[in-house]
Image (cartoon, rainbow over all chains, first blue to last red; front, side, top):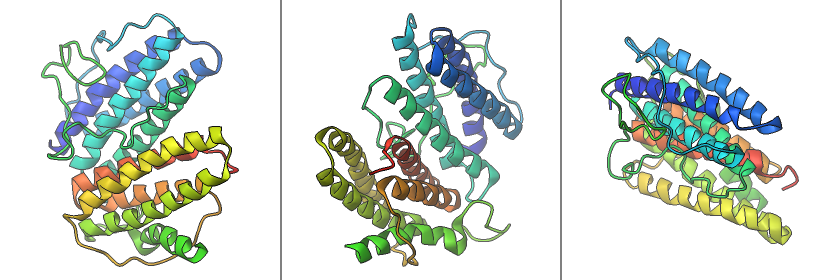
Length: 165
Length: 147
């Protein structure tokens, strides 16, 4: 994937993550809700920063198909993990496609660290211990260049895994 | 043990010291060789595993169990780095200081790996180093300060 392609894909994912955190926050209270609010702000800023890297970034869709039904705080936390994992995959692709020493590479490395740490926090709050050894690693990373699936239409429905529907 | 650990952990910090950190590379300067970050990360990961083994034997069962789960992830890092090292050149690294606790070692390693990822010339190597560094940062967050 080209650097520009990775940036565009990351913008799409971050749009989706921002949408998803709106759903997450609505089902949480207290400390978890405050964490969701902070993560929403982080991803909004990251989305805006990424748009500055792209020449024609996709606008956000009106709504996105979420990867799971969110009905309570348990499923809200699961969605938060899923959102951060999706953002980590986008960051991996961005790291892999950017030039050494570039501002974009620095940005991508920082984003991967941030989102992996946030995913670990959500897993901890959920009592989960299935933290990935390699956050963001695509399934085919061992044999080919990392990549994530991108949609062809900015208004199409997408999932937190980056696939289109 | 102390000397070995100090030596191994120092390799990572040495990368930063020689100018691989973000913002230190001047325009037009060559990126690091593909093997540089991988070799250093490999050595540092081995040191971390030794730290985990030491901590696990000294802790209560509950805490040790959590660390054992984290240790499995670091063993996976080692495997991934060995696979990457098979396609890159070895690199002699400078040697620096040791950290006082497992959490501190993880934080130092996370920062060093992030710097190495920024300067890595091969994108796939960069992503691998960044991911391992990110996982170290996450582990540092959940590792008790006393360990």
